[in-house]
Length: 105
Image (cartoon, rainbow, N blue to C red):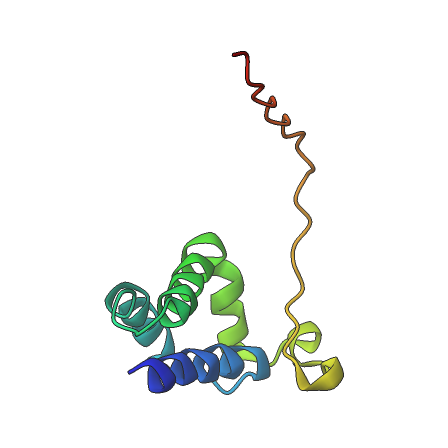
């Protein structure tokens, strides 16, 4: 389950990037994002499925746009054979640092 499930997720996202996704891809990704977490021997399958689910929820319009044609940014050759995904700009938010806990004994 682990290797096959993670590989299927990889191939599905790859099909989105190169414009070869079939009409049932989004349905499969949605199903996998909810049915695969917790079924692997480690957290890798769950993480991959969760990432696919987040992609569908956070960027539905961009995902659908990738069904029509290859995306030049996504399909560009990645260095060292790794898939790179451009991240949209998100405004920087200041996150307060946790206060250190001191021992007062």
